[in-house]
Image 1 (cartoon, rainbow, N blue to C red):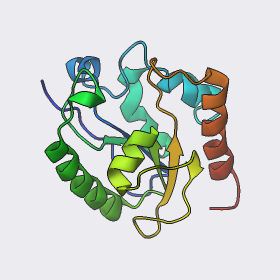
Image 2 (cartoon, rainbow, N blue to C red):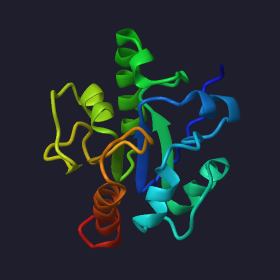
Image 3 (cartoon, helix red, strand yellow):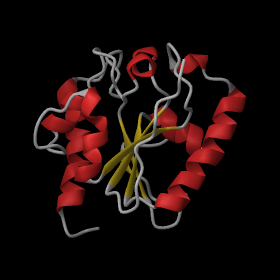
Image 4 (cartoon, one colour):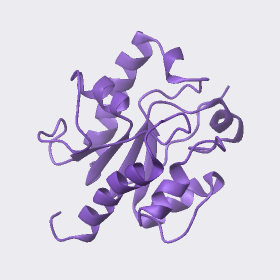
Length: 171
């Protein structure tokens, strides 16, 4: 199955970073395309997007200053199918992308994505205290997978913190 194309550019406000594409995303070539994934609803409900986008419109979010990538490019049924060597290679590639494009915020969509990248054993939701890539704020958000048991309003609330930050003068 083909990898899906990153949506990267210079001057991004947020770069959303997932584990890897789902099989559905691999089939259609768009990020967060599994119909059970809540990503697009979360972005809209948190105020990060002015309307509800669909996965097929993922490239249009570059106009909003949002990009997409994954720590591993290969589509799989689940994150448990990713090998240790894929994570190691993915960490190196992701760090290069962050250093090259320097988004204001790297939003890790899931604690596991962040811990795989950072090598830390745990993290809290929201902004992280130390930057792993100079000048790039790191934000850890809940996974948008439909398998996540956290209530949707709590998930949206965490993403809303990200929206409040980018709307404020703190950046």
